[in-house]
Length: 436
Image (cartoon, rainbow, N blue to C red; front, side, top):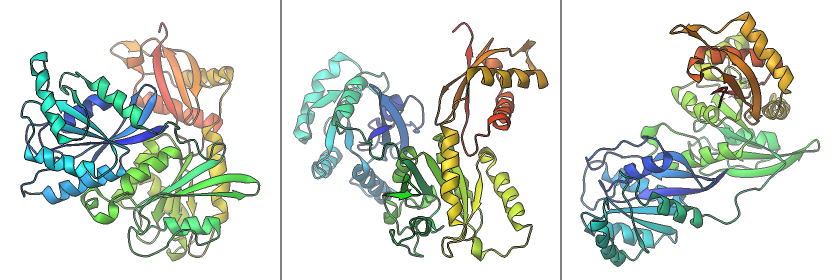
């Protein structure tokens, strides 16, 4: 569960990306000494004291005009608007600069929680230099070293304390689903068709829906929440003002959903961006349904549907488990098939397999196709156990986890799907050494 959103801001070359990478635990942001390397928002997920949050790294703000500076500043302002808390990074080696003062004035207008991180305090001799940053008027400075990890825990403690005391727990017990996709694929029209009312603004102008809109409703005694989201554009177009909410809000909508509907435009066909959008849902481990909208606008014969299904699965190789539903939001054709499919996919994501039955399937799979040898060794699976649902996650206790090749893991996944279905549901298989 995501408890909040945090933006890291500051002028160029103060170590924002180093701190970002330190917090999320991987080198996701590019780290170089060249000012302005991080020109776009970069998103990551972090956890501290059992609380997960979204972290946004941003490009540096400068007063001087330079290439990309207008876009960088706009991105930072967007990140600040999206965030619940802001980590303002300055350099303890250089002291307070005019850019720092400008950013401080910008932050003072936000009424957001500001955490002032004085970076590059690599040893105690530099500790006194942090006190001059009180003049910025944004709170108590915290001495940190992103490259050495000093003070990061103090920053994280402040981040956690800034979040609302009560985490988002609304709509518990209801089936939550969201619609994601490129702008103008018909997501809002689909929401209206599902609800059978004009709940969401519908327009042919790309990006009309600029925020996530939650709508609870009941159908045949079952409670649902549909979350409409702004379309996700290609990275190069994220700079446009109309995109100020789309990417992060769509990712948050995915995380709050049980099932994700990936909407494809039947008029324009599959685009590269569709694959990128669907990747968010797959990586989040949610139930996935591919919705091919504007089916009424497609010239078709008796083989068209089969042909398009093959084309979709050829493009979305990692989503070969996801069912495809052909609909027309405009004509309200086949809309009635969506909710039963959502229910089915949701049920599969919560399916728990008895341990003895699971082990029978795994052992039979090994007998049918033994694991290949690697450097003279062969993988041995002693025991299997399902450890969680949504998504269903299986732990294999083996002789050596390094011997579980991704191709054999995929083979085992296919056997599990043959045995238990798991329609529309991501499966995760983890190998652990038996002794551990």
